[in-house]
Image (cartoon, rainbow, N blue to C red):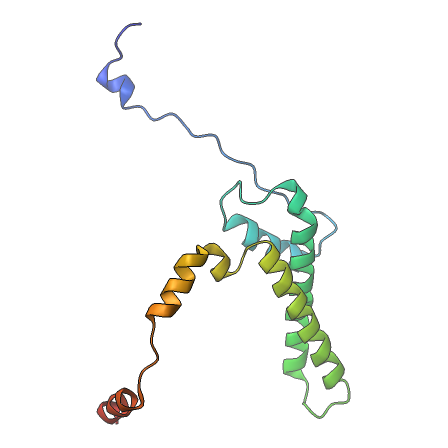
Amino acid sequence: MPKQSQAALSVVSPIKTLARLKAPQSLTTEQRRLWHIVVDNLPGDYFTPDQVPQLIQYVTHQSFADSLADKLQSLDVMEPAWPRLSAAQVSHSKAAMAAARSLRLTNQARKEPDTARNASRRTQAPTAEQLRQRYEHEG
């Protein structure tokens, strides 16, 4: 085999681009926007086709939770519908968080378990004396 020139060796060949999962057409515009935020911010091979139902569940619940939160912002707490809407918003938020955990989207899921545990052990709460000194200097 002939020896390659320096110029031939310096040419970078393109890397195969991984196809990302496409948002299903059944999703609303807002749900598709959330889908793209999640899928596009992770490596192309992070999600597999068998995770599509979980992704749909996540974006659907997150979309409902966001829309209910917006609705609650515009209502007075004393409105008769407020407790019902608030409970529905909490329910959708919890379901979205559960789906995010199962998809390993949370910050803690991205760290190695030992790394997260060791970091929390290294962090010590400040003593009362340290807090007193800190706030005396700020005041």
